[in-house]
Image 1 (cartoon, helix red, strand yellow):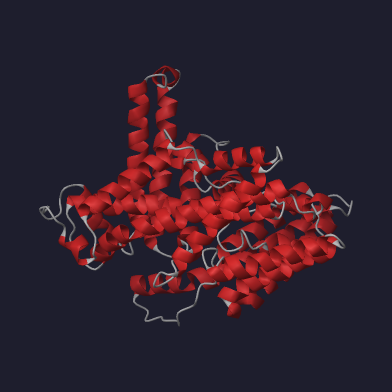
Image 2 (image 1 turned 120 degrees about the horizontal axis):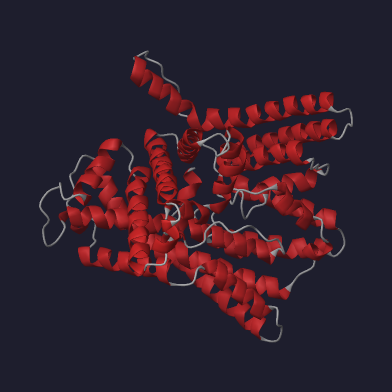
Length: 498
């Protein structure tokens, strides 16, 4: 089920909201159970054939977590830790096995067949929506159970932790410690007018990002990359518009989803972690990854980069760990060598950034106070991100090469009016205007995290303001959903594919 549909906004959400708080007045367990069942229905509405897979994954990981916690708390020292570690490894192998089969089996078999010419072929395997997110969430749970001694013995709460519908299909990646205490608080089950009003506002901001900003610029990216992947050379204007269009489409699409998740969750008195912090304002690539898809970045750092050794074993090992982490992060995004290459590019960027900072030493602080230096750093970082997004979006290396060739002025001679855009019912001037406006919004305006916190603070002051905010946000959200529903086809979120 999509957040942007009338079925969700006028059917699912009101029913789940009302029943949750009615049950919460009498039984917290019943309210949590209702939210768990509603979340399973939310997932099954979209892909009913994979509901049993989701529930089976939850049951298996709950069992693994129980065995890990039991052995860690057993008090018999090393033998207990050793048994707990075996259960941890078994659980991770189980999760990665499911993920590998459904997400990577076709990719690996196809790659081996192309390389070795063995004539291997398997039927196409459908990718279950959200499998990357609920797999990573549960791997983090198992690791935290082993490392930190956390324990979860309430199956309903654990099921809700994994399936909680605002985050289930596209994140953020959650930790047990972030969610479970909130499900145990009595205040979670009592309606809070300030949270509802602020949550509805944040949800409306996310809807606006997705429906108005991301979906309006997506035709320009689709036209350019579709032509390039189909074998058509693109000229410089088309290539730059296409690359920038996708740069902003991806940001407003995914950050819009994340805002909607945060807003919806706040309406149920649950705080989700933020996933974006104005990443296109970054002055270096390390800062970009602290601001972009923040929960995934933290997961890769805590459960991959640091266990590999991080920066504890010298400079060379640090660069190897960075590259390994980013290559696997690229593969996590999609079963394609273009995603792996995208991850490798960012690994290279991070290595260059760390090398430069080490070489600059104390001079870096002096340079950082110079506005010319800061502008150059921002421009170089943004350019590197845009170039990498070309590989992220293109369906083939040849398609990415045609876009990059156009961006570098090696495509066909530009004309006043682009035939490529004209055939798609678009115009060059419209594409430029879209890129400029969305760029100014992404770089120049306050981000939605700050806006949401300010709205929440004002709503907590009480009075009629919270009801005015709730009324305006609800009307805006309904208007946006109606507009979206009149389109020929619903536009899914980009990260649903990952």
